[in-house]
Image 1: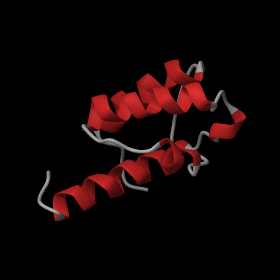
Image 2: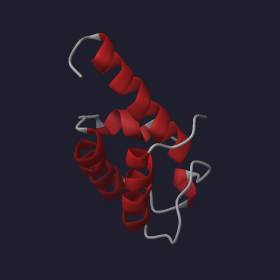
Image 3: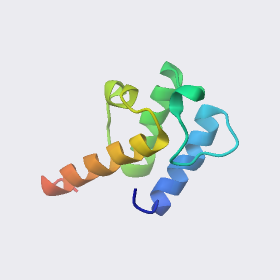
Image 4: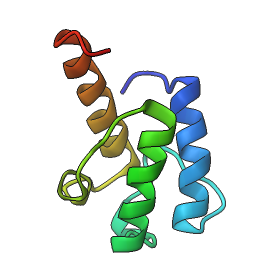
Length: 86
C-alpha cells in the first residue's frame, strides 16, 4: 500500500471516533471493531467530507480492513479523474 496522504491521515483520525478506538491504521480489521451499520453510515459521511466522494454502504460492507477502505477511496478517486470529473 502507498504511503497515506494527509487526507488519509485526517480520514483515519475520524475513523477512530467512528470505531471508538484509540488509533486507526491500515492494518485494523474492521469486523474486530465496531464496524456496524452506524459506523458504515458515518464512514460514508467521512469519505464525503475528506475526499468529496460518494460511496455506497454496500461497497463499504465489502471492506474488511482500513487498508481496503483506503484502496476503495483511492480507486474511486482515480476513476473519477480518468473520467474527467476530478
